[in-house]
Amino acid sequence: MERTQDTDLLDENSPLLLFHYDYNEPQGETDTDSDASDEDGPMEDEQDDGGCQESYGTGNGDDEDEDEDEVAHKTNDEDEDEVAHKTNDEDEDEVAHKTNDAFLFYSITRRNLQSRRVDNLESHFYWITPQGWLLMLHHDSHATYLWNPFTRQRISLPPDQEEFLTKSTTRCLLSHKPTDPSCTVLVVNCKDTVLWYCRPEGDRWNKHTYESRTLGGSRDDVIGGMEDLTAVGGEFHTYFTTYDTYSVVILKFLPGPTFTQIPISDKRGHEYPWPWMRSFLLESCGQLFSLDFAQACHMGKVVHVDVRRLDMAQRAWLKVETLDDRVFFVNYRYFGASLSAQEVGLKGNCIYFLRGGDKGLYVYDMARGTTTLHNPGQELQDDVEPEMLMPTSS
Image 1 (cartoon, rainbow, N blue to C red):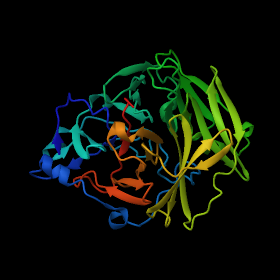
Image 2: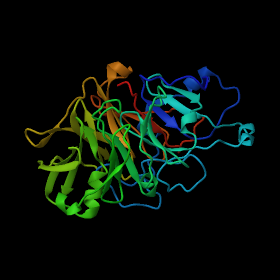
Image 3: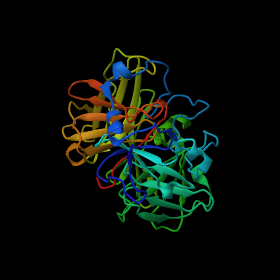
């Protein structure tokens, strides 16, 4: 385990995995041991083919007792069905039992696991955005702000006086970097036809209730599509499928929310011999991409990832054979993101993704059509789930 001082900042040029989990530290571990524990191998060799999660991303399945689509988590012993994570000071007696209460960060670029205390996460709920910034909500005061975990910069937001952030499952999206004067902070209710939005340094949150019938689908289908909203070029895009119709929905703030629906040719004109598919949307270089993960069996290993780019001129999804210098990241509960491989020191034309109930980091090579598993640390239990943090400098 690499030890760092609490005041050390995170590497703002590297994508990270965040583990908010108490781990049992092996006796006599050194930095070398930590690096050696980062074992890599083919997914087929290391992955269990047991049961699987509900669908995530586009085309979500039915809800289970523990909602797989929750956007934020808790880090204490409270009810696991809460919308957001909470972090409290651990009892000092637990430290005596060789349990470390610091947060663990796995550098995807350097492939090492680091321990840090992050005081800003104490007594807060948080939501992670694709830009790497976190929406923070104080447990007691309901004060909210955007926080950069790499530089510790804070940008004030209006307080959550309505408590809408924690009353339902919610996602947070940013139209631009929060330092951009055009930035809109959007909170999507994943259970109801409600949006909340504000401006950084603004004085209040605005509520907008939309009518599902105006978007041409059932209430549940429309809410599911809105859950997949993705920031593209200062707007928010999502993809709707309704029976035999397909469309892209664009949400703009002018300054209030305005929806535009554009018919699109069916992107799923291909067939796989594998019965299970999971889909995601992400933005890359100002364009919208769709990723379909094909699995050999329900909750089995990923055997293929189909990537398509939305061509607005043709109003169709076009198949993508290579990502070139780009690297895609998919967090199955939160978002997708894209980075320059050269800028973050990773191999291009690859897709990094996480799975539910699994600490592993999986890497799909577009050129080879193979998936590799990276083990972030032997001292971490296999079923602990990390979260992805994108560098805010990208």
